[in-house]
View 1 (cartoon, one colour):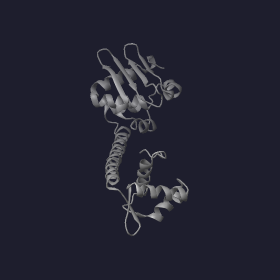
View 2 (spheres, rainbow, N blue to C red):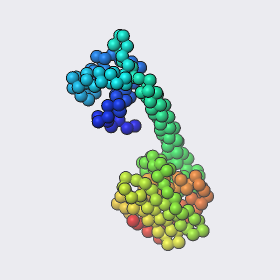
View 3 (cartoon, helix red, strand yellow):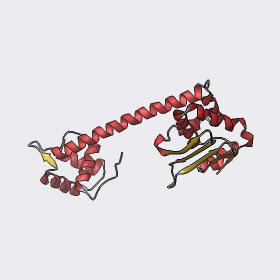
View 4 (cartoon, rainbow, N blue to C red):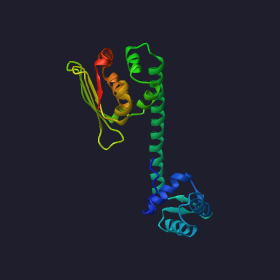
Length: 227
């Protein structure tokens, strides 16, 4: 949700205010008070001029009782924004529920080979962080069991994507995020990016993802976890 104040554009500024107050109508004085003293966006004098200009330009409609409503064009725009915003909220709620179910399954249901293996390389805190990484942030370049190779890029906090390389022939796992390099690699554990990668790989081919995890865990002492 972008609530950056668009002070240089009167139309967008009015739209911004209405997103916040979210009322079908409001009196002139209440709107003035809200803008000046609740939101502290401008002085009362400037606010009065702003409202009067909006009425003059028919962006706000004033009735005989001095009540203000958005013009039909602005109301239509607000309705559209509210609909999109509702969809975004519902999507986030759904994602949050799915994330919780995934973590619960991985943490509590350790009967499957995948869950057993992924838990060996991570902990609950890492799992919680991993499920918040979006699937769209992962660019899977190669996932080939015959070659024993996984190559992927993952968008993160850096301008450049993080890189992951897993080579079961050379027993090398390379990744360049700070958490992995400074903390996880020393103990041959996964960071959130590696856990997320294997969750994505599981959805593509669980059998092959398990095969890679088994090859890493079976000869873990011979593996190099490096940047």
